[in-house]
Image 1 (cartoon, helix red, strand yellow):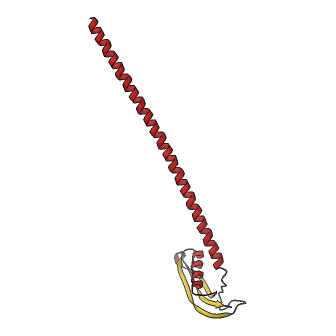
Image 2: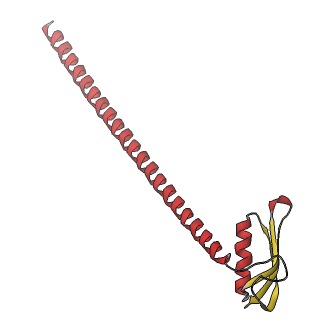
Image 3: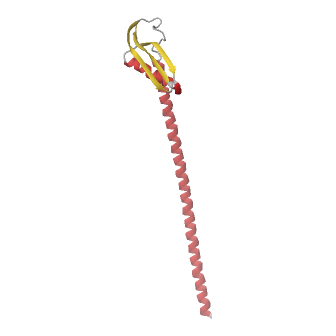
Length: 149
């Protein structure tokens, strides 16, 4: 009976050892899982930070571009314009050509495009300028590019 008891004790010790090893592996697996979760959270936070930085950079670029376009339009608006056939205080040296732009949703974009075309053809002013809003919200501008003295 003593031998039988000893084998039961050895079996119980072996089972306890197996159980301890199993618990150790479970603990290691849990710790590894927690490490992965922490790492995933840090990666997610870093991705969010990078996305936020990129968004701020894009907003800054958009603001700079908007400011540049506004300044360009202010400079272009220095070009003398008139809705009649003359510009007060200036003499028309020659009339270059009629210029028209349309299909712009934004009036500032239409003006910028129109005045660029006036300057591109050598005009220093505009006479007979007309701005119209068309159906669908589109803006149409037309006028005669002239050289003023």
